Length: 219
Ligand SMILES: Nc1nc2c(ncn2[C@@H]2O[C@H](COP(=O)(O)OP(=O)(O)O)[C@@H](O)[C@H]2O)c(=O)[nH]1
Ligand SMILES: Nc1ncnc2c1ncn2[C@@H]1O[C@H](COP(=O)(O)OP(=O)(O)O)[C@@H](O)[C@H]1O
Image (cartoon, rainbow, N blue to C red; front, side):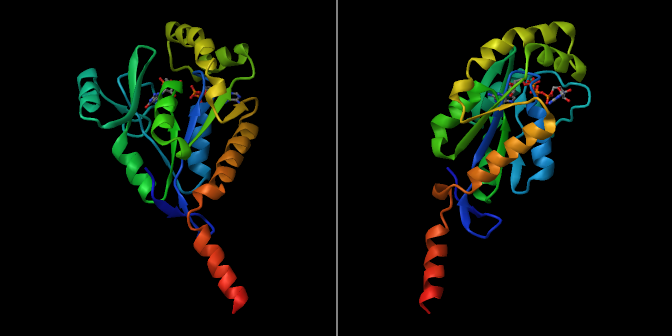
């Protein structure tokens, strides 16, 4: 699914799909924003959703806010790379921007749930790197959902009661990060991305690079 771009060291590399999942409130959005601010060569996948916009969210930046008929038309038109129903709303990843980013050599960051992660993995196993974020405790999770102050008490209750089910999928992920402290969790997530970018099998330009080095040594 991906062609190549160039790593910071100039060696051509396959783009990767970097997935963050967690129970609601554990910190995916916070960590995604930090990654987007501090890492180059990374494009955020903006999902389409039928859920109502929260205060402060921007259409086209945080999500594409669409109604159900439009979402269904996207599914019908095969415009979504994956999609799922979460908390009674539909969420899905528009295919075209992801393919464009990967083919221009960028990595793509996804904030999607376990159902979407499974679908991406089925489509492109070798190119998916998945990270599951855990909260340090249930009390912290609840505190964070309240501190975000963007959902009603009823929605928060729903999210808390889904957390255990969401969390049961942790073992399907490549990496697990416990978000005690934001800076530490960010450093861990950043290290994962940096190391995955250096994986030999993604660095399709290495054969040529090493050949050229050998040529220089023989000259
Ligand atoms: N499968 C899938 N899940 C998504 C997508 N976009 C968001 N989600 C997930 O839907 C869930 C609810 O997201 P949201 O309503 O923004 O609440 P949040 O959990 O507080 O970020 C989260 O687990 C997101 O990761 C998507 O495009 N596909
Ligand atoms: N390590 C942390 N310590 C304290 N608060 C945090 C931490 N990480 C995130 N938060 C706060 O918790 C709330 C939920 O985080 P958010 O990133 O929106 O979670 P998610 O996207 O997983 O639902 C936000 O108000 C955020 O600022």
